[in-house]
Length: 290
Image 1 (cartoon, helix red, strand yellow):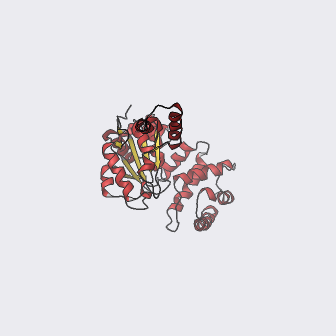
Image 2: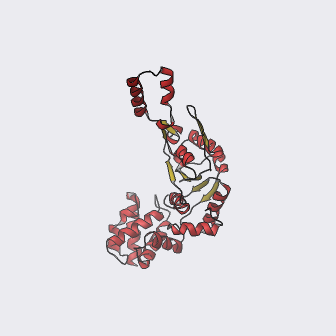
Image 3: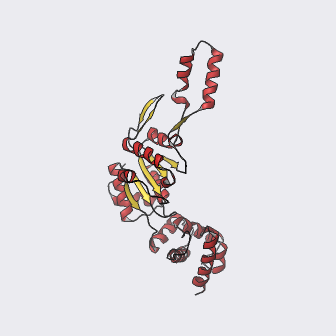
């Protein structure tokens, strides 16, 4: 059943462990109600991908994920033909005999030999949630392709005809803003910038997603992470995903309270750059010794 309000969206997402603020719940509700794609931008680790996963889980819909990368084209997103099975089919026809070349060729492009890639799969399976992850890593041509699909929710397969979604899929696009997306794509979507959560909300997120971590340890970990994010000299400030990893790592070492030795030993769960490691190690020494 479709959510009735933004608060209903927030409540449903919370059942999956995803805690969001009122603004994000509102834009998600509007995207569902207006059947518009939702474009999420923000720093890595702020929960953009996790929101799409939570939407699919809360609505009990299949999640179809398209991971974008440099050089991706429409073929990787739409469909391909199962060449090995087509060859086996031709050999079977030859062995049976009696099929002319034109009929044999036509039989090769049957739907049973079609390999649906994420975009086509989402249209075929809809209602579904289509996650287009890190769309900023793709190029302008792929953006134009996405815009065309999102405008009509249909694709044309020359050998089979047009495939149109009976119900438009819920579309979530994420971007880490490594480049600016074109205005045409942005206009098609509802937009929201996901920022890092405040201290109290991040503590709630840790307690929700990692209930094995005590509230005291969660609060200590989040407090340190929040101070690290306030710095302007880190190549990649830790996101919520890193907060969760760090809290779990410390918990698995059997530590109930954050101390300098355990913090230093588990630093690989929090920062991913050598230069950041040295700066964070020094910052931890100051924070945890004071």
